[in-house]
Length: 381
Image 1: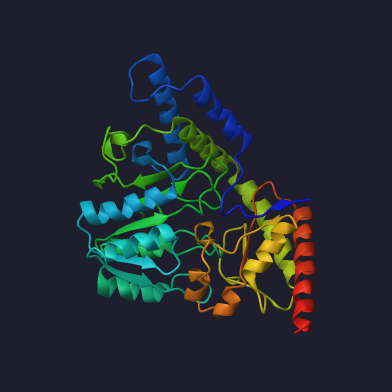
Image 2: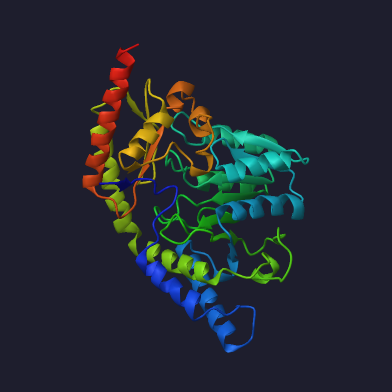
């Protein structure tokens, strides 16, 4: 029996989402920019999805700009702030997704000043240090994720947002991993820009959105047909966007039940991990997403362990899916001060609403067999 335990990387689309998409792949395939009946039908699908996504994050539909995913939305947010709004002083946390960190590095190479917000040993932005940096550096743009995709640690976005606003800066929140797992409120978070994505909430891949404060004049990355009110040109992925809308509707209705279910699985797994003295659960003292367990095993090569677990039918990760092909230790764990050898042993288990307690037991059994194998091999040398 196999178990898919990598839901922070992507989720299996909900059948109700697929059902909502199918008509827009088969019958309602018109271009929403047209004026004939089929085009108007596609446009209605877009409009409905925009309302559904906006409702999930407590924004107005007009604030939703559909993109090809979270990476494009992060690029749009940060490059628009620098290129279009003239913002040259940037702050990002040390644990951001690559699509924020790499954009910040790119902008730094083109004249922007970039400072990093440090994190504590629990993987949370050090609020005191952040407030001090904001006061001294006065960043015009700050990018901070709502919850970390590796540890699950929930970040103090409201407090950071307040400090940024007091310095007349703008806050970009990458809410991709938090969306659908915990309440995400564009207004109360104090965000000016917010990134969300469909495939983390049982929707299709290749669809995301940037939520934009009404007062901001967004400079597009893509020019052409003027879609999305000129903010993101290109014929819209209607079926994908409709799927995103349906996934957002379901996430809003079922969030409490899904979170309670995955939290129970997380608790069960962490209780069972206590039986392994070599295991360290990262960020365990932090307030975390209900579905995420990130742990290391002393003396074990993480890549080998993950491949062996895969051979045993356990689909888990070493951290961010976008960095999984790198041989470097997790930048998140290193920023937390974790020893590099332990960081290289990291395994992330991330539950979805389809996972079961039986799969937790399957995983523990597979892990135990692998650790015994590592132990016996070590004894040979």
